[in-house]
Image 1 (cartoon, rainbow, N blue to C red):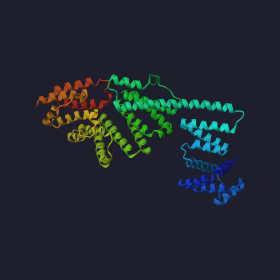
Image 2: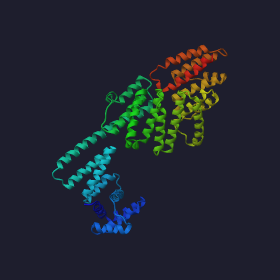
Image 3: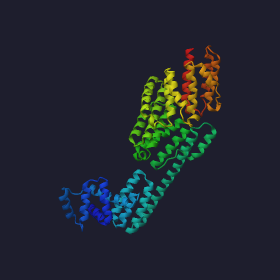
Image 4: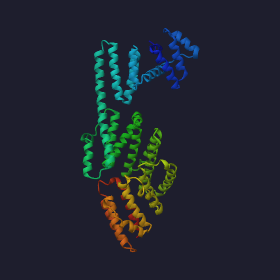
Length: 488
């Protein structure tokens, strides 16, 4: 039978209330009027006669209904019916509806379409539902010769899809545990936290570089390994896995469309790994991809502000590493203007990183008053979590160094004599405080020897394998100390 007959049969099978609902539904969807005209013509025909129907259509709009128009009308009817009965699974419910009306061939065609699309998008839960619908169709159509073979083929597909779903579920559990671990502990700082991390990710995942048949699961696996190595501070391995994941996201649009925020977050982490490993040749290329991912998807205003702050911070880090301080300074001025425009919405937890790197840009060009202004935003930032973070700890050390450069010796002595708790600072911070105390005791004498001792200690402590994420702190101190030693 023709497509026109299938659509006529579908219209004829609707109850009066379903037909009324379709008209309302079509109007609310702002459907083209020719679909509604075609629906009315088919609905008013008591018997199917293809020639009579074509004549009626010609009188209305001088056009013969092409297959695409009939297909769209059929889809719209099924959507309205599913909506009318308050069902969420449009494909499965549409097929069930067609079966209930005895429109088996239309049901087979729709099932084939939906399965093909679900295969391409790896929608395994939808495929399992569609396979169940296929079993129902086999039962009601009472296929004879190939029924047994068809059922076996469906069973095989079922098992394959369920295996993919189980793999995805296991990967999801691991990923969620890693996210929770990262929020609780940050990156690995000692062997104890490393043991906890390794207990989350199985040896099979770590050592076998596991391959998955499913694109979705392969992307998820690479994403997990990128995050695992990032937390572990193995930034070279993290970079490799993150680049693999992003490549899959770019190649298979359906994966990116389902997880746009994860794509943007991964690009942000990848940019950090490029900075940490000093592999800067592809940095600007991935900055463009990061910006494109944020612009491409409909994120909330809050999410877009978070991403913009992260992007600014990453670029400032880049200019710090490349020592392009004048470009960093221009960007800092742009950021100041952007902050003024958006200050009512700036509640992001990324702000402390941004404030710190603006302060470092000003410090690099010896504008110590401006550096102090931006660093103080972290010192006095009302965020209880920040008070215990490494950013706050380093900002406190930077505060001391800025006051030293401003020759605020009386204030500096007061700051250093406060009851600082040693555990509040990193090992690096406590070394700086100890040596600055010695320098203050020298009064006006040249402190080059002490600066030289401090320089050597900083270089030695840099070998700690659990301190790779705070490389910018070492870079800053080495930069400052080299300048102090060259000044004589």
